[in-house]
Image 1 (tube, rainbow, N blue to C red):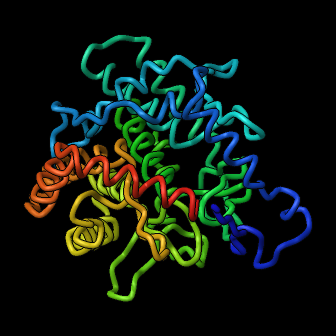
Image 2 (cartoon, helix red, strand yellow; image 1 turned 180 degrees about the vertical axis):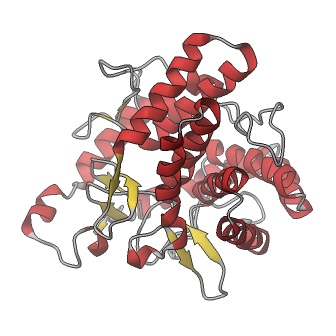
Length: 346
């Protein structure tokens, strides 16, 4: 059966009774998951699972349109709050929630459409997302500015509200630096500077970076110990560091970006199991292969990162993983492998 543990770093190093009361039972977890995947009504998956697409209009070394289109996310049908901010319906006990990553992607998708078409309604939606991110940037227990998720989330460890994410930090920065460039308002850039501090700080000190035994730097989507190095979250966060460098020309940001590019180049072989890509490095006996959606996302992310960096290794792995995707036997093997992992772990 799936096993959830509590992340002591989310609870100040101990596990008080109120944290145990918030712990999700296996039954609650599977009821919500089955409802989201098998039910006909909308869930958070309505937002997340668009077809990943490279934006053909992005230009390397220039802060313009975002690297993926996010066109379906820009046209998200809701729900929205009264101010027009998108919310995700996680079903079950979690219900409707603000998700900083979703709000950032919604904003970036609308930014792309506005830049391409000049539609003023898209401009309004982009700035609405940017202003929400601006207003919701708050200090964590270490005093670093982060975007919090105010709901518990079942992962390998139970992420207890409020929790933050390296992925959210990266994509929030991508929104804020574009809002600054778009409006000239320095408030957006000042907020991006604050959000970037997490990329200079280890997870043990309240930041979002970790280092593995080989000295590679990682941006952690979920702050758990030991870290799991989720691949898609690492790459999206990497693009946020890149965007920050393009605007600020910060030597520190350039150094961190280059180190992370080396991490990706050196580590992609660890995510290739010969028939599919891995979602993460969970430290379990059975590896966690990516779902079909995330496998496709990895391919798109690697093609974009090859264009941003000129590193051919990324294109080579994208080609290899696309060949896996086109092989029916390998697709079926990956689905079975994924299902077994979910039943055994999380």
